[in-house]
Amino acid sequence: MDLEKHLTDLDQDGFTVIPDALSQQEVSVTLQAVKDLLEEEREVALGTGTQSDNLLTSHTITGKHPVFYEFFLNPPTMNVVRKMIGDDALLYDANIRIPMPTGAANPRQGFQLHVDREDYTVVPFVGGKHFPMAMNVTWCLVDFTINNGATLLWPGSHNSCIVPEPESRPPGYICAEAPAGSAVIWDAAIWHASGINCSDSPRYAVLAYYIRYWMRGKTDSLRFIPPDVRPILSEEAKHLLGFRPAPPDYSDVKALSPERLASLSVQEKKVLGFAVY
Ligand SMILES: O=C(O)CCC(=O)C(=O)O
Image (cartoon, rainbow, N blue to C red; front, side, top):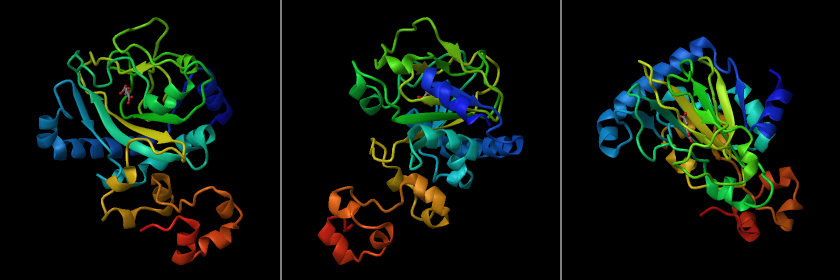
């Protein structure tokens, strides 16, 4: 993969597309998992508005189905995400989002123009210079086309440091058309909107949101992983979700070597101020 090109795209345009981030085998396994999970949640989700005629969603899916336990470590994607927001990037949230072939949209459910997590991706930088805080990734499980509701993106808008007016549709957008298996990565600060699906089949996709390690955000992914799933996760997946030692960065702690840090007793951690009760 041309890593430099992806980084330049993200820097200048605010998005990039990695073709074949998933093999066709991975696409079909993931698609089946998506369908199974939606079916499992259907009855309740219809009541909560999480599934409707126009849109099927499922939230915080990492711990909900074995296929997703390690999915979000997808190597081609993580190569880019880690370069953009740090090797210690966290998986903040992950979901399924499927605009259905009704040719219609639900209000306030991502079809309108927006940025993501503006409290920390845009608002702190208004009137100043953009700094990438979070990356969104969409894995296309079918070909994304203008007709089936591929995501609309406004290239360069991440540098405006402005939260757009949701009901507006300014000129200058592109449609992120991409073949099944692609990962579309965008800076969470880019202006974007979901397209409307005017085709005759669902637009299947899995989405993830990665953030800088030192941000907390408003989704507590750690607590959303069911206790019986935690022991099954690989060390890398646990790390991605934030199951990792989190020593504070004041000088007493920074003065310790990694080995000394790793060997601290609870009493010592208590004195240093980061024992977990
Ligand atoms: O599904 C899409 O095309 C867009 C999703 C979106 O806007 C979001 O997750 O913020």
